[in-house]
Amino acid sequence: MNLSRRKVLAGLAGLGVVGVVGGGVRYWLGRPAQVTTHDYELIAAPLDVELVPGKPTRCWSYGGVVPGLELRVRQGDRLRVRFINQLPEPTTIHWHGIRLPIDMDGVPYVSQLPVRPGEHFDYDFLVPDAGTFWYHPHTASGEQLGRGLVGPLIVEEREGSGFRHECTLSLKSWHIDQDGTFTDFSVPREAARGGTPGTLATVNGRRLPVIEVPAGQVVRLRLLNLDNTWTYRLNLAGGEVRTYALDGNPIRPRDFEGEYLFGPGMRIDLALKVPAAGEEVQLRNGPLRLATLRSVPSSEAPGDWPAPLPANPVPEPDLASAETLRFNFEWAGAVSADFASGVHSFWQINGQAWDINDKTCADRPIATLQRSRSYIFELRNLSQYQHPIHLHGMSFKVLSSNRQKIAEPWFTDTYLLGRNETARVALVADNPGVWMFHCHVIDHMETGLMAAIEVL
Ligand code: C2O
Ligand code: CU
Ligand code: CU
Image (cartoon, rainbow, N blue to C red):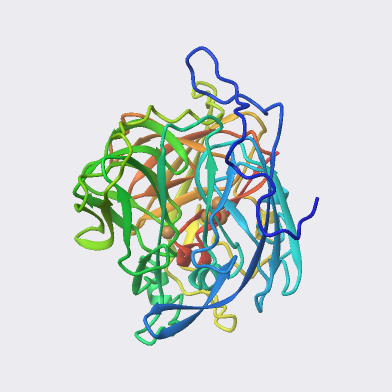
């Protein structure tokens, strides 16, 4: 296998359908007879980007673009990425939401050693679930994600999804001033509150982009929140919209109405029925425009809503036998005594703060789960700020909340826990390893709000 070629050996187009389709249930079961490998070479390197016109910003890029190169693979296939670090500091890649073996999870000193400048690392794993995922470092996250090391990872359905058109929309704000110079990625005063917000909102690395969509067609919009801090109050003005998947996992399609609270790390797949040519749909954060989708003439026959997406093969937790574990997320207040290192500890899970400079934290897991048993996690937010709670290695099912009605439980890897909310989620501990469990507001995660959960 020649890894020096830039992109995929086996493209996605023209592959035969190998998935198992049975009894009307569109469900992919197990490993396909024929596993195709998708090979990428991915370089992380500095890149000057004009986020502010005429004022280049020194970003860090994956594959020469910010946000990073969109990687695509098909469900059940194998993804191999030769990752080459041409940055001035060590880094890793974590594959957010992908259920993979621990040694491919990209967490320094747990999964692998950091990849030093000039070194490379080969990531290689099978991709069990279809959906919208992403990748990012798990080292010096505030700065590394802040400089642009965030990229979409699209896993196509094993069978056709029914969507003929799609468009990836990566949301990220930047911590820069009017000259395009980076400002602080983390300010202690902000880290102790909602996190340090970026100042310039972009979609696909551009401010207020206009994106053309075909009139009369149904377009799958894959939205990703790749932000360090912002929870978007996502809404669309103009055009009929339905929700098809949350955080990579299909739901029964329903109308998208009002605002969706879209926290860091989360994804949502929407279907947009594009209005007549010349009309516009606005993608907004509350009242603020993020992007414009402009309808352009299309010669295709009008599209209709596709069927629901096939469920992913996530194991169903057995609630009757499940043990309940409680996790409290709280504000710890005190600035740590460790002023010399500049590390602050503002947040705790069950009274324990993660120290990003202590390589041994993962040796003291906050919980130990027995393999293949079911668990219910009771997540309690004892603070005034919301926390997108994320687990590596396994997907969990959202069961109930004291703040919102959960009519239909769904599988996810990230749950936005509102202020003072208590939610119950469940999972089957089917993936052995030491898995990070953290808030995806990067400032929170780096000032204590992270823990390790071990599956034996
Ligand atoms: Cu996006 Cu530790 O994860
Ligand atoms: Cu993750
Ligand atoms: Cu948080």
